[in-house]
Image 1 (cartoon, rainbow, N blue to C red):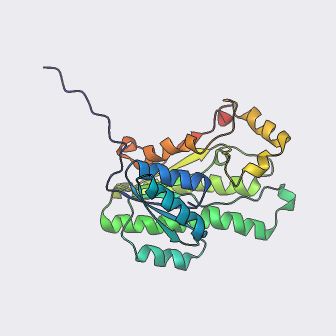
Image 2 (image 1 turned 90 degrees about the horizontal axis):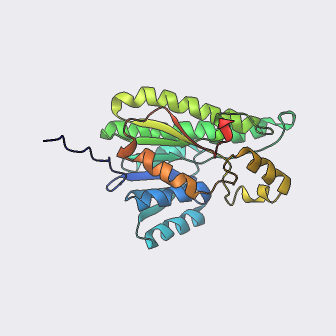
Length: 256
């Protein structure tokens, strides 16, 4: 008798608890929706209470399980208190971030603190708090950090953003090494320019839009839907042997 065929590992997330930061709109909301559609119970986190409440309600209306939790992830005391009052999560999507595009000679200390503070410091300590809970609960969890193609290349007017996203790549790799013994994986998703409420005003500049599309070899701006399959993949058993790496979803930008 021939050996039985192998069975594809499940992409389903039934019974898992997920948390998504910066989940009020754009990429974060899309990822929360994707995880809920795959069966996870999702907690949407952001400072904007009305946005995450609306997002969670929309997910529930679509048949998913979701709750909203107002939290400023730059307040590390509030982050610690938040995780102390909730059961461990199986999945973290570390998405909250910001950008202040300007040439390097115009960057101020306040700009530096705002971008690196949210994109790196907050991301680090949110992931640390989540990982500690996973270890205590003996969960084989998945940490998913939203990086950028700008964590793999440079870009004009992006000195702070590139610094933060390259840092996320190194951080994730080291997390992967520290946490592997606990069965906890750490990976990044590195998108190209994605059209969201935050980025849409930039694309109103036709010259800027054209310069971006010229670099994206598939010839279009990214959509949040382009990232939804990736987050489900990294959260699920389908990626069980992946840790310390990056899914670069850039339409070929970094291939050149």
